[in-house]
Image (tube, rainbow, N blue to C red; front, top):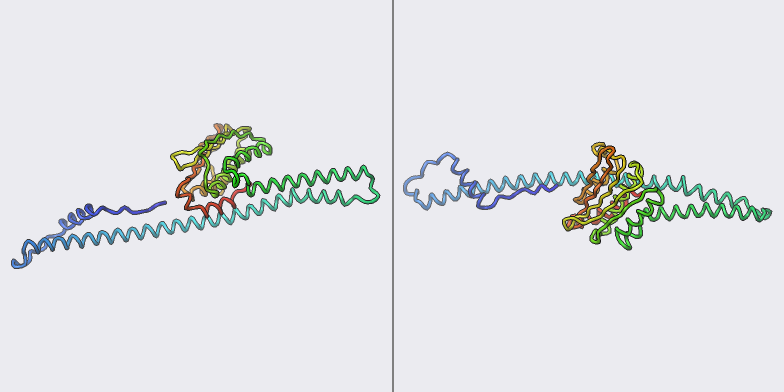
Length: 307
């Protein structure tokens, strides 16, 4: 997105001014008394300086145009990001409402109804049966609430880092979705910044969820490694059904991942063909670009694509 103009070197600028001056129509010589060699030399230098100044002014004008274009482009990105954040927050509220209304609330209501039927005249055997049913409903509700809490704010990422969080995620995916995840990570593949950890975790989870939903395979490989010093590469590879990457729509989860990573200088690359599996690779910068987006990345990672 950089549009920094190139400034010509002083010597090159002087040569361009000299060439431009030679191309101008020759001026009639001044009267003989003032047409000394020194006066002609000074006049020539003055003309060259005037041309140099005009060239510099043109460069400044072009720089101003480039900066205005860059500012407009960044403003458009910010507007797009603000829209994505609003949609992500609303989608999260919708998912929470659906989970609480359709799954947690019925369990609590069932437990309450079971217990409300008990009275002083209820037989002991019936009391024990109803209590067991209520305990089962409450236990299920507690497990769902605990799972929701960990999905919203994974504690292992904050306490032990991205690799520990992904290890826990792999266990959850196997237990709940039946997808076996082979996790491989190098020791240096660990972002120091908390915002990047959350961003990587959420993006990786989205990719694993896509494999579980669409790939039609029971196994996937998750690899983390550091490349070129300050680049973290996270790849999710499966041997499933595959798809045409050109069919990815702008509103899809994959497109949203690519845009979020693009905001910090990273990206998402999809290598897939129908019937030949898929390799999705996240490119995450760990240097100054990511550090400059720390606040932005933290807010976005905590509010996007949970679950």
